[in-house]
Image 1 (cartoon, rainbow, N blue to C red):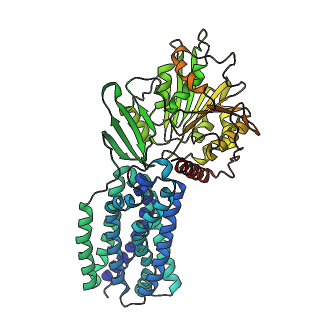
Image 2: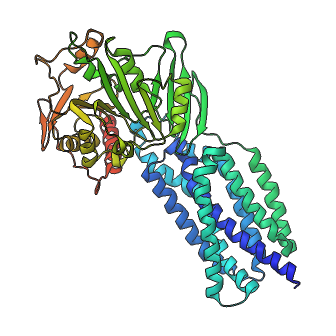
Length: 545
């Protein structure tokens, strides 16, 4: 074989191995993003994706070992790469129909717990197993082809293939997360992965007629896949989708309903179910019954009307598109100057907040995007009159590191004497596993009693705490409200509306409930608690139906 031809053959073989490694990681890391509009991106969904990909790769390794025994392994590589290219190109088009089998539109959140876990597993198996098996088979076949091309022992060939494949995996890992997904979106990311695999197969196709046939078939079928679209959930009946984009973390959409004074905008991320992350109405201030954001104004509601603070500083962890800010801006006394700092992990959410939710920076407003709330908290060298904790992913999942006793101790250190913590907790009552665990953990971390308040007509609870002071109770002399916020009084005075939890004690001054689990940085099973929360609520709802 002439030297130039031999060098070209080796280069094509090396590129094929490199691209297969990159394609594997690109598909694996993009898989959760592809499924997120239906199933979210929880730890359970990630586990399902990783498990299915590993299972597919294992099957591929075994199948590839048998293929490597056939004559002309490079020809087998062409077939594998082209078939994997087709499988990758079709994933965006296949995701919607398959996901809807296991997560039909309109499923309420309390019925979605098992679907989020087992539905995502079934969808993952159907969608990603073929590509994982094909890409897994590339390795053994490439080792055989490398040994025939370069000579030497099996160890040398295997090491060369593993090295190139791992380098490709690094390219796919960083490229998918930091460049492709936020830059070109989910659909184009999969198409580019398919195109790269197809190009690698094309460079090897000169090896034989069957190789050229595989390339031709992949080209025709892949072209069909390109014409099909990715169809994640969009606007529902009576809704208009104003914007949709894929950030580095999630799929983000802005949905609008109604008109005039009834106009409402919602920010939804990943799976929509029947939930949203932020809300906007034409007028700032209270949103009305059913919206937990109104409870973020309770510390101001308890302010002495004759002596409002001249300056009131607030830290918002989980800024979203700025709903908490807009509520506080609408209810603060005229004599009070608000100073608000906000942390939001996803810069795209802040960008859309500025465009559609009137989230504005300026004097007394500082918003930090791309910064985790706990990491940002550690960098602050000031204290606040109030901290608003509303950090969630995928509508319902509390980040584990924002639910531990160590985190609440850090919050205590960032609160001024008499400062308030107001936290939104997704749960169905004081005995809910998530609510009980968060209440106990917050009380221990803050070193003070906390109060759990039911949010009317919702599946949320508000956690209130005051460092160095007590939360006012119905009947106390301090149980007073600013006139503009007196509308919040009535629901709080209903029987069972609130429960107090002290460090190491449960259920004081209200309906008692089982002491929750203490969550720590070392052990924080919040994902299991959230699953138990939804399952128990679903069972209770079915029993009462």
